[in-house]
Image 1 (tube, one colour):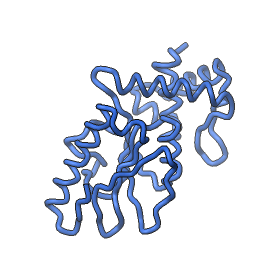
Image 2: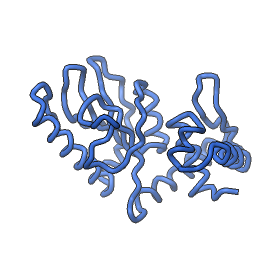
Image 3: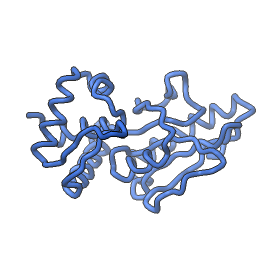
Image 4: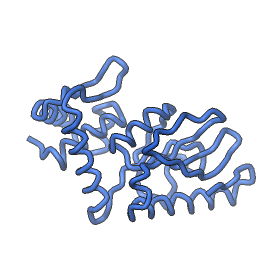
Length: 198
């Protein structure tokens, strides 16, 4: 049986971000059958009823309070470990290389996600620690627990950092936000069609 907090919960979280056992196997460098076994064991042991739903997304249906407490602990461990391991998503339109990450940035979870409400929920649930998303002219309403910080404007919209308000000043997250701002500023300096807003 996998350690629930150190092995099992990250598998559940990654399945919510990248809803594919093969994608999570690749991220964690495990085989697909191990990922399936881990999430089923953890779900059964904690009574979560965690599974893939008709919309193609993984989600727990039971014991939400227990899962919320475990995710708070998991997030604390990620951000306090040495080195820290913030879990962040880069789905912004510009400022990133062809692989979706700037060379100055730590490795992020690279998922192109156009569903801003889903990203907001992953941040609220502490599955993600931070996200860079693109907004069009009609932004999605932001839950009170989240804050957006603009990075730059492009012809296609505005790239913003989205983070939980209670995490924005946490040292690891503040350092990541600073690094993101510097990376986007550098990108904007070399691209006249971009307007840096950071």
